[in-house]
Length: 138
Image (cartoon, rainbow, N blue to C red):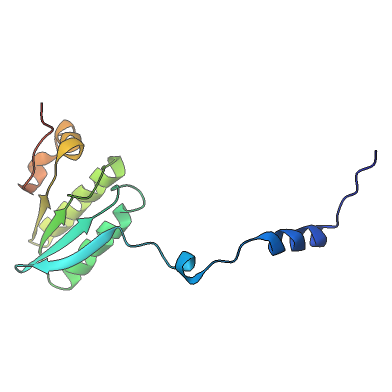
C-alpha cells in the first residue's frame, strides 16, 4: 500500500476552504475586564475578571491615566473579581505606591471572601483603606 502525499499548497488550500468564516459578532473584541467611572468625585475602577498577569497591566495603566488626568483618589471595586493571584497583589501594591507618591490614596471596595484572605495571609491589608470588605465567614 502506497500513501499519496498532497503537495503543501494543495493541503493548505483544503484547510483554508474548510475553515469557518468569522461572523461580525465572533470577530468583535471581548469586553474589557475593567470599567472606569467617576463616583462622587472619585475614580472607580471595577474589575470583572481574575486580577492576574492579563488584567494587572490594564489596572496599572488605568491608575497611570487617572493620575495624569489629575485624579489622586482611586477606588478599586473587586466585587466581581473572582480571584487575585500573586501578580495581581503586586499590581495592587504598585498602584498604591504610585498614588501615595503623588499624594493620593487607594481604596479597595468589596474585598471579600478568598480575595480578602489572600491579602490577609500576605499581610497586605494595612496598605489599603477598605470599604464594604470582609473576610471569609467561619
